[in-house]
Amino acid sequence: MSTTQNQFDKKSEAWSARFSEPVSELVKRYTASIFFETRLAPFDIQGSLAHAEMLSHVGVISAQDYADIQKGMAQIIDEINRGELQWQLDLEDVHLNIEKRLVELIGDAGKRLHTGRSRNDQVATDIRLWLRAEIDTSAELLLQLRKALATMALEHHATIMPGFTHLQVAQPVTFGHHLLAYAEMFGRDYQRLMDCRKRVNQLPLGAAALAGTSYPIDRERVAKTLGFDGVCRNSLDAVSDRDFAIEFCAATSLVMTHISRLSEELILWMSPRVGFITLADRFCTGSSIMPQKKNPDVPELARGKTGRVNGNLIGLLTLMKGQPLAYNKDNQEDKEGLFDSADTLRDTLTIFVDMVAGIKVKEDNMRAAALQGFSTATDLADYLVKKGLPFRDAHETVALAVRECEQKGIDLADLSLAELKAFNNAIEEDIFKVLTLEGSVSARNHIGGTAPIRVKAEAERILAE
Ligand code: ARG
Image (cartoon, rainbow, N blue to C red; front, side):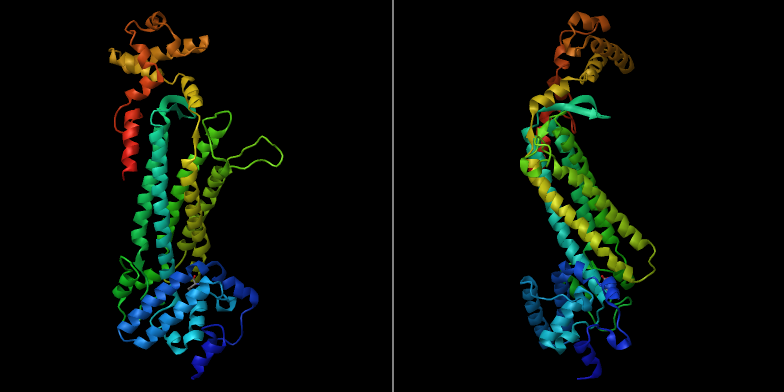
């Protein structure tokens, strides 16, 4: 055995031959990433196996080396799954921990694995492989959430509630229509994630430390083995940029923003003051002091976690902005925020698919609320326009009628025909159909409108996707 071989066997650091004094325990902890990145291990092994297969294919290592590496890695996967692999701080990160164990298990073949590779292209590959899997999981959950909303929308395509602007009663809408607004948002979120996936799914391996490698590597072969759509076209860029992670965090922030808006509504709707819905007990908790309380903890936390997810995005953007090419250790700080955003996204979506499906609707309360606040006033104005009045004049006439009703404490539909005629003589008996909640929503019968027939068709379209 040569001296350099002995270094890697005996000392923990892969580069230790170069140094004359050890780092302190604190510096070790400060510079290590092992304790927050073990989730990358299966992807690290997957990447290593593809790299080794390619090295043996082009003749840089022997077929026997590759077979040994496969065998060693299979055992390491087993050890990880059984929780037996002891992750060592001394070995700094997941890459060196796995490599060290491989060398322990298979000797020299293990030491040949790192030929033509650096931890810089290795870690970039691991993150992309892991993130691709996360995107696939969360994108699928977004589709499920969209379907859960559409299922509920179908059931409530004709359930009337007040639609709000400025949180004031504006016009009646159907509850189904309201839910489908969120289905639209989550549909765009899905597209954003899938678009981000295209840029995540490019192979950095082969970039080595920064400049590429002098071995006759076949990057396209590795890309194919790992299911990447292509290879990163510039080695400096491949090891250094984390824009794909930033994009994912941005897309996640938008999903969570939509989740947070929905949460805010669920919380409001569940307030006894509003009383539009109840959430299943399994998403709520009680109070330790007030026995009557049922608190919507899950939507509140989702709303709160959105802040942290936004913070992760800003963290990554800030991490990147000052870095010269190529790899800098700063990039090790990409992981915790990214992992946190991905975990939060996955967990939140999983819970929301179930929670949305379990919403109990209090239709009578929704209807009663829609009857307050003159929600059909615009319908009266539109009626007058159809009788020939310019819209602005119609608007003015209805404003006067609303004022009178307000003084009398009644609704527009409670005025008699004679009273209505006093505002405008063109008003006929048919006005009473227009002033009903059903008449109002049914009249909005166009693509994107709240007419029950449209809401039903839209919900069915989404469910058939
Ligand atoms: N743990 C490192 C990271 O997460 C791996 C790459 C280390 N490369 C290096 N040159 N120190 O980025």
